[in-house]
Image 1 (cartoon, helix red, strand yellow):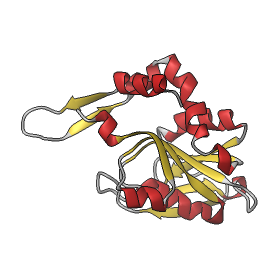
Image 2 (cartoon, one colour; image 1 turned 45 degrees about the horizontal axis):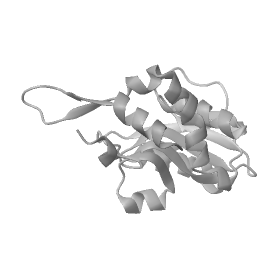
Image 3 (spheres, rainbow, N blue to C red; image 1 turned 180 degrees about the vertical axis):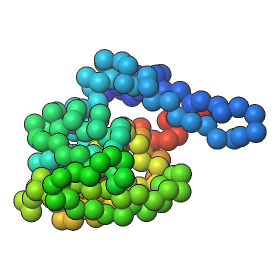
Image 4 (cartoon, rainbow, N blue to C red; image 1 turned 90 degrees about the horizontal axis):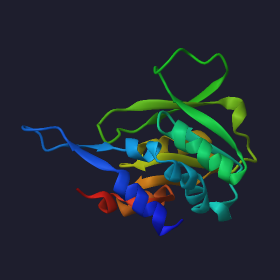
Length: 180
């Protein structure tokens, strides 16, 4: 990963203030998706974090993971599998395996599922997402994948160090890289 990509990620990211009466800032990552240099560099940069582990498949949770995951899969020369949120759409008409996701950064719990036939016993699955705040989604997908799980690659990791270590989360940036 180049320092140029890190600089681009920082320069196109914004925190949005919700206004008086709140101390909560909302992340605006839309600049990342608008800049073709970032889109061109993200896949190889995130793939490079786990190149030595030789993943055979990338698995990503809805929603933003569906954008970032295929970029990494393409860079690795492997396939991509979607991890769907339960209740987000009509039921998928194929056998699924599901895992409960612990409360996320908003305090919400969810269920994530993948098509049972798309990740096999011999796979080495890399989870890819844009942001890890608590590790909840990475933990949920890890539970789905079992021994196939090799780690999680994210653009930004804000997890406490012990959570990042437990879940083998590697990132291009940390939360402090984007402090307002």
